[in-house]
Length: 126
Image 1 (tube, one colour):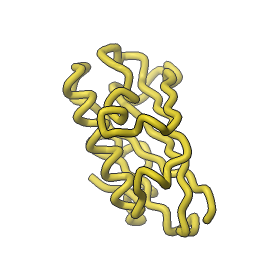
Image 2 (cartoon, rainbow, N blue to C red):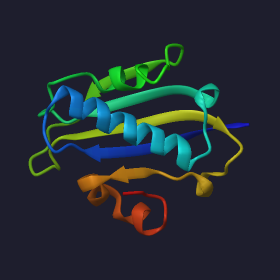
Image 3 (cartoon, rainbow, N blue to C red):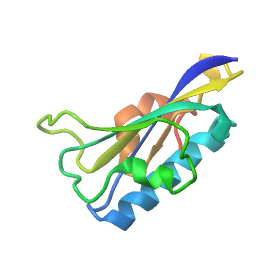
C-alpha cells in the first residue's frame, strides 16, 4: 500500500456549530466513500477553516464519527482578500492501493469553485 492525500472542501451557508459539524461529516464521509477508504486506512487528517468560522473545531465533527485513534489537527486558513468565505478544507492522508490519478477529491456546495479542474474531471462531487 501507498500513502495518498485526499482533498476536500465545503462552503458553509452560515457559521453555526450544528451546521458546521453536519457539513464536515457529510464532506468527510463522501471523501471516504469516493475513494473506497475505511477508518483503518486513515493515517492523519488536517482541517483548515477560513477566519470567519468561529463556531466549532471541524475535527470535532470527525471525532463524532468514531475516529478517536486518528491524529487530527485544525488550523486557520490564510485571510486573503476576496477568498471564498466560510470554507472548511480537509486534507486526509490514507493508505490505499489507488494510484494518484485514481484518487477522487470532493468539493461540495460553493467550494466547487475552488477546484473546478477536479470537479470537471470527475474528481469532485457536489
